[in-house]
Length: 421
Image (tube, rainbow, N blue to C red; front, side, top):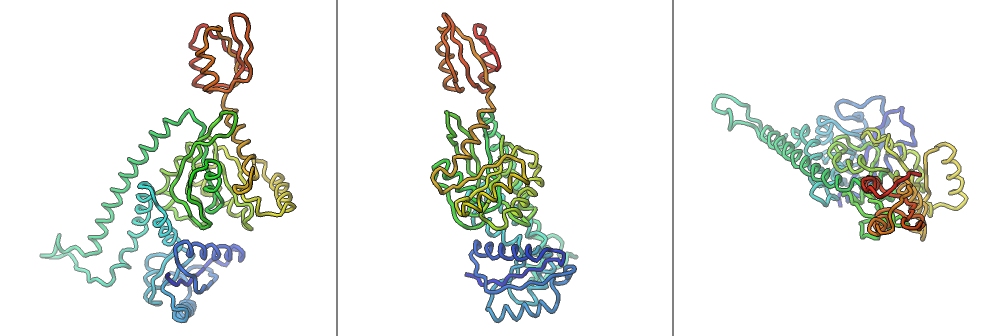
């Protein structure tokens, strides 16, 4: 297990409480990556030092801490420029990582499907490309000249070219995967599609596991699950929804990582409803909620229908839960449910809300058909929700909720009379 010293270097304008939250989260990210935090250091800045991000005095203090704690690694909560990282490595004589690189490492260890592995590799290579020079400082560079053109390329230039080719290859493969995913989505167009979105560790996978009964991996760590999963969920009265889990969001999520995961997040883009899962037991749930809304806005998903799903209410005292419910209803008029993925019946409010949404998609109609048309009556029972059947001599009157595609088929039958209610 690598021993890590963490460094925070926020601007002085940042709220001190927010600084502590970011450092606490960096501890959890380091733990998720398999590291052991042995020390931390924070310096509030007017502006980052262009040479080493933090001031020269803090660099000296950091070196002393690294030696005292016998650390192998220093992790910055801020994104470092390639030159800053190179200068810090030279001054501290240990490996330097920033928050983006740490998150990419976690994603690489968690990816399971082919698509996720391609996406992570693409993000890692795009992050690596401008930083290659730091990795090859031990190699002599041969300048192209007479007798050296072509074979006289430096190792650095060769690697840049190879990485550029690999990036182009990965983008092509991801386009193929995205096209296959789009084809699968077309086959699901008639179904009610719901996507779980939210801050990492808010409980999205726990909700999907509890509703579907599937053996979905759940762990109390950041980014415990990376690959999206879709399950068919029974919500009652014969209605079903397709529920998809998506990668969790986090503060300062690397932009190139968001870009490379756009095809996975297309599931959320195509959904009829987003379940924004919020860990109500987390002391900073409001800040996490704002982070998710910011990422959704970046992905042009802020206008999609949402149901706020406040999770983990089982961890709150009853009085505190009721006070939070009243407060949330006061400041946010959006539809919301309060659930627990571990208590018996704790997800019933969510199921009720999904059932109401699923039913609302089916228009209510009155269908008059000949009594001999038993096949159409069976179709109404199978594909719609029959509310009432009334025999009327040689004809039958059926009040039902029916999907739009069935409504279109019924309209094409001459002996059937349709009235929308």
